[in-house]
Each structure stands twice: as structure tokens, then as C-alpha cells.
Image (cartoon, rainbow over all chains, first blue to last red; front, side, top):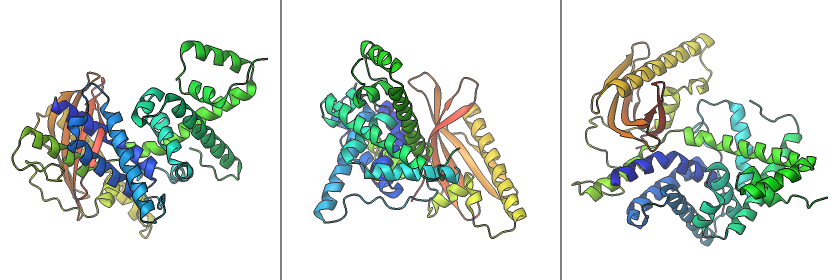
Length: 173
Length: 222
């Protein structure tokens, strides 16, 4: 039993890290969040209910830790959201520069979204969870998830259409 | 005339989250509304671009420390002596010293980021380096396939590229079936080259054509 959970947890780490990166907007912070999430998940593994989704449970831990961090930074008077410069190459060594430029634009847009929209957008559109799963994970009515997602998706579409029309710098593979 | 499709319905339809009746109603509305069809396409395109932008993260190696935290936690549950939960203690059976400061740089060079090296060398020198890295990759890949396909857990396959001086060892450590019935193996990689040492762990699963596809890689960042 434990061995199955251990393997499932490890196999899930790349997706958890992707979520952390989307949330925080920086490679270093994402890895700190990944590590903190693993430590907390291990400490509280008995609270996870077998038969429920392990990935949802860990996404939830990661997001709660992230929110705590945002709050404590606010208390300390620091900027709530400050995605630093992208860590050059750490995730993307072999990929072309043009995809990095395209990514930078999407990332900049993500960082400007309110956290409540960003989480929903990442969990559904990138991580592939259903509306119902995200509603359970975030303890929200499904209607709230639906409307937050729609706002985030329309904003993303408008942003990408807008920036595609401005000048010829759009990176195309 | 029917009611215009609202954003929420269109997004939910694009995501395949509507039930069959609702989806059919949307399709009828779409058939009469070219502007909504355009919006739908733009919604799908922008979602694909968001995913593409973040997929590089999911494909990149993860810090080994996270894997070790999980392993140590489960080892502690089993009651293994001396396995502190949450620590980044190395597991037994890995005798190499692990002191890797520039693991990201090592990884980039080792895995083909060599074109990002400063262009101080002449073009031929750069080409020679790239060829050497390609040979490293080929040797590493061949050893990985050999180890996963033919070796029992605990038995290693070593490789060496005499031109670059880089060498490594790949050892399967566990074998299991995943939820889709594929055979998968966890393995360790120890590798040393020009002044760097890397320790990585991975999980690869066997495709129906016999190739092994790596699903998770963790690198050491100690």
C-alpha cells in the first residue's frame, strides 16, 4: 500500500512542480514550494483518504502553502507577488529561444492575474482537473469555479490576441 | 434568433465539461454564430499556448531532494532505523560522494544545452564539443535501454565516452506495473565528466515497441 502511494507521489512530482511554477512564476520559488509541499504531505500522509485523488490533495497543500506565504509577505510589508526574472535555461536548456520568448509573455500574463483566477486556470486548463474536482479541492461552489475560469480564459485569449497583433515579434515554431 | 452564447458556456464547452444535452445546444448555437465559432477557436488556441508554455517545466528533471524527502518519509513509516523523515538523506547503496554545486549547469551541458556555452571558441571547437555531447547522449541512451531491458534490479550498466572522458553507470532499482499495465522501472544514474558529478534518478516505462520512455527524472541539488 505504502509502496503504491510512494510511487504515485514521485510520479506526480513533475506535474506538481509545473503547478508550483505557474503559481509562483519563478523557478527557485517553485522548487521551494515543491519541497515544502512534499515535506508537509509526508508529515500528514495519514490525513489523505485512500480512494481519493492523491494529486488533488497535494495540489491543495501546495496552494495553501503558497497562500500562507503570500499572506506572511503582506504582513512583512513585502510585495505580495514578485515573480523574479526567469531562471535562464534551468527548465528549458535544449529548447529554442523563441519558445522561451513566447513563454515569457504567457508567464507575465499569468503573474498579473488575481491568484483566485490563476489557480483555477492552472488546475483546469494546464493540469487537466475537472470543474468538479477543482471545486472540491478549493472548497468552492462549482458555479464560482466556472465563472473564475471563464474570466481567466477570456483574459488569456484577449491578451494573446492583443499581443499577437502588436508587431511581428510573435514567436512561431 | 436565440440567446447569444455566454463566455462561461463557451469555455465549459471548449473544455468538454458540458453534459451531452448542453453540448448539443451549444453546437446548434455555434452553427448559427460565426463570431462565437471564432471565439471558441481562439479559446482553444490560447489554452494550447498556455499548456505549451508550462510543459517544459513538467518535462524537466525535478530536484532529487523532493524524491528523497518522500522516500525518507515512507522509510520512517516502515520503521527503518536512521531514516529521518523530511531529511534529504541519501539512500543506501549509493557509494559515490554527492557534492554537486553546479548541478543545473552540469545537467545543461550533459543533456545538450551545449549550444548555450559562450561562443568564445572558434566554430570548429564548438562543433567538436557538440559532437562529443551527442556521443555522450547516445552512449547514455544505449546504456539506459540495456539496463532497463536486460538487467535485474541492482545490476548496473556502465558507459564511457573516451573522447569526452565522460562516464556513467545506470542501475535499475525497482520494477513495477503502473496503473495502465505498463512495466516501469525506477533507476539511478551516476555520472562524472569534466569536473562535475551528477546523481540522478528516474522512472521509465516500457512502450509496446520495446523502447523505454522516461517519465520522471530527478537530479541532485546538494
